[in-house]
Image (cartoon, rainbow, N blue to C red; front, side, top):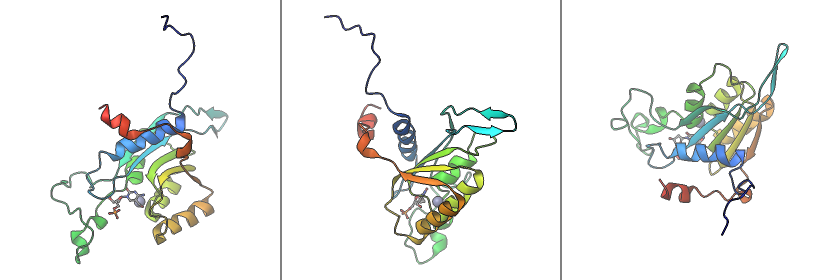
Length: 183
Ligand SMILES: Nc1nc(=O)n([C@H]2C[C@H](O)[C@@H](COP(=O)(O)O)O2)cc1CO
Ligand SMILES: [Zn+2]
């Protein structure tokens, strides 16, 4: 049988699926025993700078996941959150995925970019996202949406004109479990 085809493959990943998959895979690097978060920044917007249009070329310009600060050994830091002593919890130490993606960016200017993140951003990350110039956020999961931190994020995103939308997983064939089983 002739298996040669001149037609392109049909079930390739959309850009949305591709970037969210990168965020989901990045989350798998997290050492947090409870919640693993990944983020991926993409330069998805045309911008006018002076007389030039800066190209929108869907390049990944930053990736991050939640983890302890550089130099703070994952084995020495606390990963729990219920100790009476807050200094003995992860809360005061963990760098969130969004923050890590922004500080790990590989280009000076990320104004107008889009961030894919696996969990709805907290208020602190919302502030960093806004200040970095990122204009669009796509999140995968919003299990923390009822929290005041997330409500504050929504409030600031609205004020700052940042669009935020839930990833539309009904439109996807993507199965990260299948990908993982092939690694
Ligand atoms: N958007 C986010 N990005 C993140 O990187 N995180 C991180 C911080 C912690 O390491 C973990 C949350 O831990 P827990 O409260 O679900 O046990 O996820 C949390 C959120 C939620 O706001
Ligand atoms: Zn955060």
